[in-house]
Amino acid sequence: MARASLWSTLKQPLVHQNPVTLQILGICSALAVTTSVATALTMSAALTVVVVAGAGLISLIRHHIPNSIRLIVQIVIVASLVIVIDQMLQAWLPEISRKLSVFVSLIATNCLVLGRTESFSRLNPPLPAMVDALGNGLGYSLVLMVIGSARELFGAGTLLGWQVLPLADQGGWFTPLNLMLLAPSAFFLLGGLVWAIRSILPAQVEASEFDAPDPTEVPE
Image 1 (tube, rainbow, N blue to C red):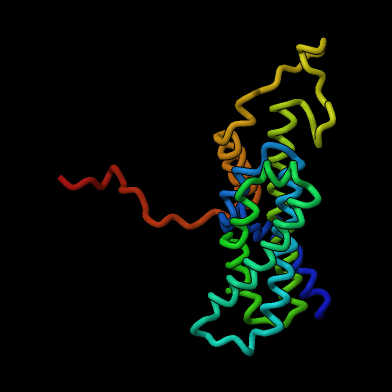
Image 2 (cartoon, rainbow, N blue to C red):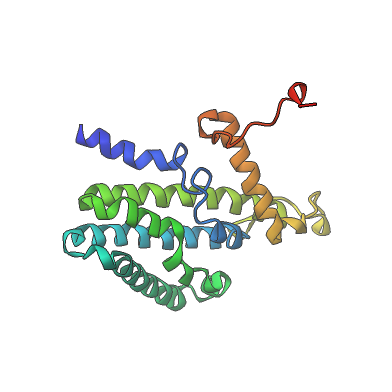
C-alpha cells in the first residue's frame, strides 16, 4: 500500500497535477530558458535537484523549525542549494550557464520550489516529501523539454545541436521560423499545451467564476 501511494505521488504531477500546466507555477523559467533543448534540460535538472534536496532537508528538520520563521528557513535552505548548483554550472558548463543567465539563481524564488516545501515537505516524512518533489520536478521538466524541443526544432532545425531538418540555405527544404526563438513563441506554445491537455482532460478545467447573463432575461 505504501509503495502504491508513493507511486501515485510520483506520477500525479506528470500530467494530472502538473505544476506548470495545471497549477501554473514556474512560468517565468518555462518561457525564458526553452530556446533550446540543452538549456531546457539543464534548467530542468537544476530545479529538480534543488527541489528534491530541499524537500528532503526541510522534511528532516520540520519538527525543529519554529512556525514563525518557517518561510525564512525554507528560503535559506533552497537559496544555499541554488548557489551550489549555480557554481557547479559555471565551473563545468560555462556556456550554458551564460545562456541561463539569472534564471538559475531565480530558482530560489520559484513558486514551484517554495510551494512544494511549504505545502508538502514540511508536513510529511522525508521519503514521501522527496518523491513528491521528484514528481513535480519531472513534471516541470517534461513541459520544458516539450517546449524547448519544439522551439529549437522549428526555430533552428536542430535538436541538442544536431541538424535534424535540412536548411534551405544549405540545399535543403526547411526555412527556420525565427519567431520560435523569440519570447512570444514560448507563451503561445505553453498556452497551446495547456489548452490541449485540458481538452483531453476536461476535469482540469476550472469552474467558471460567474455565468454570463441570459440574453432572454434582460430586464426592460
